[in-house]
Each structure stands twice: as structure tokens, then as C-alpha cells.
Amino acid sequence: MRYSLFSVDRDDSTTLQSQIREMLVSAILSGQLAENTPVPSTRALAKRLSVSRNTVMLAYQALAADGYLITRERSGFYVSPEVIENLGQLPDRVQPKEQVPGDRVDWATKLRLTPSTQFNILKTENWHSYPYPFIYGQVDPTLFPISAWRDCVRQTMSIKWLDAWTDDRFTADDPMLIEQIQRRILIRRGVIAEADEILVTMGAQNALFLIAHLFVRPDTPVAVEDPGYPDVRNIMQLRSSDIRAIPVDEEGIRADMLGDAKLVYVTPSHQFPTNTTMTMKRRREVLEWAAQSDALIIEDDYEYETNYRGQPTAALRSVDASGRVLYVGSLSKSIMPGLRIGFIVAPKPVIKEIRAMRRLMLRHPPGNNQRSVALFLAQGSQDALISKLHHAYSSRWNALSEAMETHFPGWAQVSAFGGSSFWVSGPPELDATVLGQEALKQGVLIEPGNVFFADANQGKNYFRLGFSSIHADKIPKGIELLSETADKLLHRSTKSRNCSYTSA
Image 1 (cartoon, helix red, strand yellow):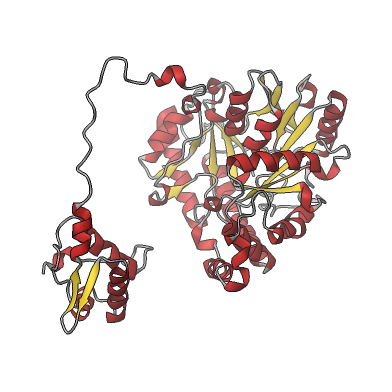
Image 2 (spheres, rainbow, N blue to C red; image 1 turned 180 degrees about the vertical axis):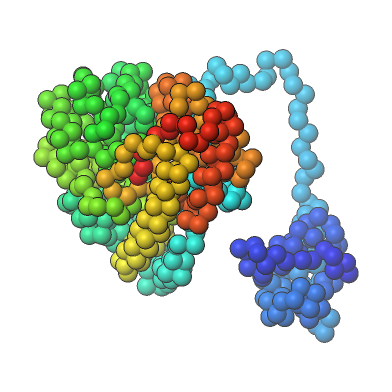
């Protein structure tokens, strides 16, 4: 037996038992272990891999239950001949038919939409491997209470909660999660809502897509912030030919420029990406415009949890007396982006129709995820996590602020409260895309800002620095390296550079 076939990776998140099963199945399916071939004894393989004999035994028993191995009395485990026979019955690889002229599909003439051609935010997939990841929207896994989350998932799998997620709820959401959203999340934002005014979504992105699909026609005038969230701009462009980019100033979106738009998308708490907090005066102006124009407002409260500097301003919906604000929230910034749990708060007739539309798209978000999140909220784990995030983010905010003041002097303003990124404006001759490419060679990840503008050329000298995924002690060195890279591109000294930034 060639023991070189077998090895385990202790840095892998997969369990040792699962790794043993996977390598044996691979060896069998590839023909390296033929039928009736004995596999190593549990004692020998355990010694070879430096794992417990019980771990190997459990892996072998599982493979025997799946039909890959058979046991022979006083002899051990062997590769099952039935598995090989079944594999042998598989048809040979199907050969493609000879192409006949006219057979090929001309997809360009059939596709009604081509969203892949849109200008989107690009993320570095292996960002974990870079020492200075100033990227937005990722969480630091060292801050996450994995034990508490594991306990919630374990409870969800118990007999007590089994029917909470095994049943098909059709269009309904987990009532426990809805209750927790009401009590633990909305109340903090000053939003009061009944259960039938809340819908759970697969993240905020899914919520925005559903709203656009329900309200936007080909000729609907839609106003979006500029600079603003590119994904919502792209979503609206798929629905309407009348998308209007409205400038943002130090008070938020320019209400005086909304005109005859019928739908406006805003991020009042932390304007995306400038991090400006919409003033109460501007909020009243936007609400007055909506009432006079018979228009609707989409409020994306995407970063409500990161309010650790000063007193946060209540949500726009909390001061909306006419019910024109459709509120979108997400748990991505506090729990985990990959979980994809968001929600919409809107008047009952709206939720009724969005719920029916969601049914056609995905029925409902996975019930086990909904119940796990509900338990995480109910047991106070999210409250503890937010407190931990506030402490860590505050430290990182201070570290980044000091580093920017040293290497990129001249910052313009500070966000009223919290956030997890800095918005940077370099001199006009700076090309932030090139800066990002050069900085990457030093292990520094930044996000060029032109993607946030309706006119990409307008934002060439802007970039964003996220700090949710980088430790505070790495920030000074990362900014120093970024400064050196910028100096080389601009051929100017750090002291003479006039670079301003806003922070959140």
C-alpha cells in the first residue's frame, strides 16, 4: 500500500475525519485503489497521519455505510467491488455532435440584458493573503464570536426547533426573526413596524432588486446619489432608461435637484461612499419633495451597526409621516457578509406584493439561517458583538486617522458617527486605479473610486480605504507604503501633496 497517497492538512477548516474520507474516495474513483484492494488498517493509517485511531475508524465506517468499503471478518476493510462495477456502468464520455452550419446559437441576439458588461465594484478574492487589506465590506473573523454562533446553529438543529426550518413556509418568514428585527434592530433606529410590514431578504442587494422590479418601469425617472452605490445604479439601469445622477454635498443628496423623479435611492446615515451623514434639514427637504412629487424614497441603512462616534441620527423612515420611505436593512456588517440576511420595512400593501414576488424568485430565505440568526439576536450575542466591533473599529479609525494626517495631510471632514471606511480625494492628476495596481505590489489593497461615479472619469482621483478587515497595528505601515507609492506616481513629496479625505 502506497502510504504517500494519504495526508491531512491541519490548517484546513475541514475535519480530519472528512479529509480521510475525501482522500479515500478520490483514490477509489481515480483507480489508484482497485476493487477488493485492502485499505490500510485503522492502526497503521492513524500512525501514518498522526491522528487518533477512532478518527480513522469513524471515517472507514462512514465509507462502508456509503458502499465504498466492505469489511471482511478478521481481515479489515476492502474496496467494494460493487462500487467499481457501478463506475464501470457509467457511459463513456459523450462526443460532441458534428456542428452543422446554423446550429450554433447566437446568444448576442437572444439575450435581452447583458449585466456582465456593466461597470461594477471588483473585489480581490484572495484578500486574506495580503498584509494590508484596506477593503470595504469584509469582516475580521477574529472579532466574530464563533462559539456563540455555533451554539445557535446547534440549537437550530435540535428537535425543539426542527420544524422552524424543515417545513416549507411558502411565503412566510421565521416569526422569531421578525420579532427580533422589531425589538433588537428597528427600535434602535427609531422605526416602529408591525410584523406584516417586514420582509426578510437574501441580503440588502436582494431587497433592492425586489423593490426595483416592483416599482420601476422602462420610463420611470429614478434618482440615485452621485457618487453613490454602483450596484443600485446598475439595478435601476436594467429596469429604466431614465436614471438621474444627483450630486451629493456636505448635507447629503441635493434635494433641490430631484425634479420630477418618481423614485430616489438614498443612504442617509452613511452616504455611500463619501460617508456624509444627511442633516435633519436635508432629510425634511427630501421628505417634502417626495410628498409634493408623489414620489417614493428607498432608504438603505446599510451600516447602521457601526455608530460608535457620537449620537447616531435616527433613520429617515422614523420621521416619515406619509409612509413614502421603503427601508432596507442588512446584518452583513455585524454578523457576516456570507450569511446574506437582510430585510425590507414598508407599508403592508407593499410588503404583500414584494412577498408574492419573492415567492416567484426564491420562495423565502433558508429557514435554518433565519432561525439561527433569530437565536443569535435573542440571546444577546449580536449586542455583545456590536460592542466588540465598536471598540475595535474605534481603535482602527483613530489609527487610520493619524496615519492619514501624517502621510496624506489635509483631511476635509469627519463623519458625524461611526462607519468603517475613509473616502479619499487625491490631487486631480492622481489616477487611483493605477495607484491601486502599484500598491498591490506592496501588499496594500485599496478601492479606486471611479466606479462610484456616474461619469467614471470624474472620479479618477478618488479611492476608498476600508478598515473593518485590517488590524489597527498594521494600519500605519500600510498607509506609509501607500504614501510612498503615491509619491512615486505623482513625483511629489509627502509634504507637498495636497490630499483631502473624509472618513466614516
